[in-house]
Amino acid sequence: MRGPLRLAVLGAMTALTLARADVPMGAADLDRGKTAFDQCAACHGLGETTDTDGPTLRGVIGRAAGSREDYRYSAAMKRSGITWTATTLDAYITDPQGFIKGNRMAFAGIADASERADLIAYLEQATTP
Image (cartoon, rainbow, N blue to C red; front, top):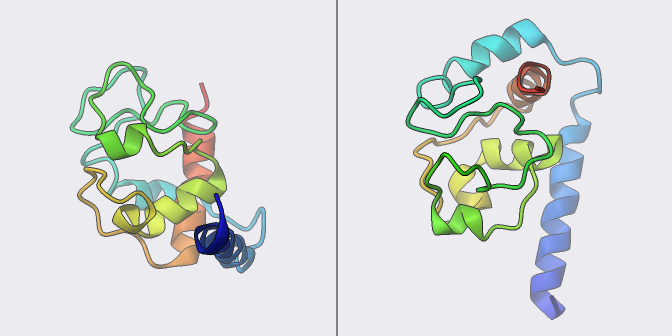
């Protein structure tokens, strides 16, 4: 990556890091995260296999985006090059279409940083095999 594109990517990554900085580590509430997951559960499960409209989120932390064999991902998701971490999930959940343009997830996102932190903490705990 060169020039303006590289600067834009670095700026976006810095902004994402700073956005997470307003929610102290360990301050996330797992019960609120589980409640926030209810809106995800319409399409995503937490089991071993995909049995919903979206892929299972089991083992999502540390997994390459678009890599489960049992789900048909969009080309945009497959070629994103993203590995799911707390930071990448935070950016994606904030604005799914803005973070990975052309993905198929029909979800507007969660604007509230605290709600996202709670949800991600819950996912980290609930999806670790």
